[in-house]
Image 1 (spheres, one colour):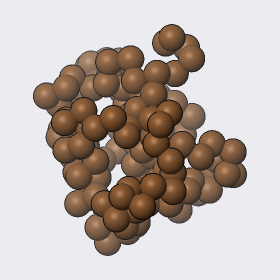
Image 2: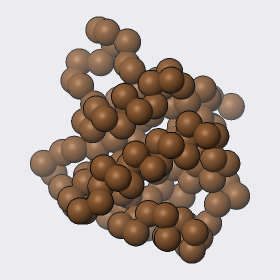
Image 3: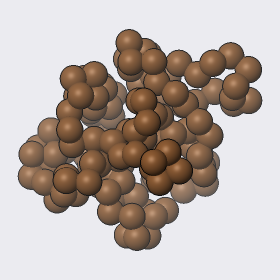
Length: 129
């Protein structure tokens, strides 16, 4: 969970951070949401904004070796889609939309995979290399 006093605003989707608590996630403000890091890797961003609500939810960060069109990902996360705000320029970020019927189930599944160190998720950003 974020350290007290570190963030002025609370990240959305608190259940997601609670599920990742055993891994001591680091949460930082980023663009229009909150980036979630596990160690040096950014694994996702949590977003809930009135501007562009269609892009609200959990933005998963795929690893270098994971294709955004991976059929296994699409089967595990039926609502997974591209992020409109990124305009197709960044393909290794995909959205579990908060307005999908299975949002919490899919988001918690992502947490479970992260807790088990699934190699399909997370990247070390250039700023941390």
